[in-house]
Length: 247
Image 1 (tube, rainbow, N blue to C red):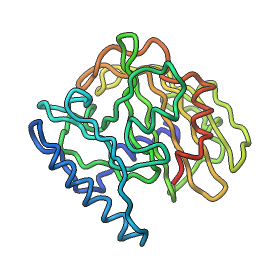
Image 2: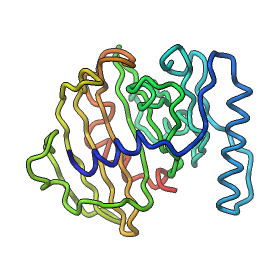
Image 3: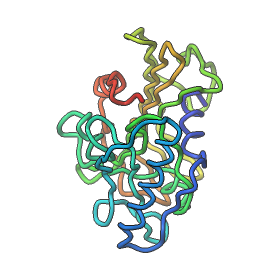
């Protein structure tokens, strides 16, 4: 398993926030209160003056259900183009499909009340991409101070899953690596589709990870796998270079 994969999976499983998903639907007021509390905590840490922002929460028919029918809410973080899936969609090319913000940890692990990982970048999160009857995912995560970073992830040796079609290039600000992870059968999910992974290692030590995933089958699956990646390799590279993803 590559450092990229380990870092992304660690992020998905990290419990650093005490916000839980309330049971039942029709809980917009509760989510609004949670969003306000989380914004206040961010203001207390940074010392910045809070401003009113739209928070792109996906509820009701726009959200994806967790185990037991609970709705997975979008992150309240707002970036240059607004918060949640609506803002993230503006960073993507046309024709990608319908975008919804979800929690892969809650979907795959089937733990609807699992704490969500802390957002670092303005568009950190997991996004379901639905088109042509299938569902894939784009996951974005920024790490400010990673414990360790492989300087050359394209030459990691004999690892499982293997790192295929791996390229590393110098780009303004750092090094960009894009690799392919083949489809594989796992205990949970029962089947994982192919994944394109991008890792942008910045000169200041921060790392941007993007997972471009055809989807999965098994518990928590939202439908058949996409026949093609949510983003092509060139589109993934373009997304990784967008400064709007960085805090």
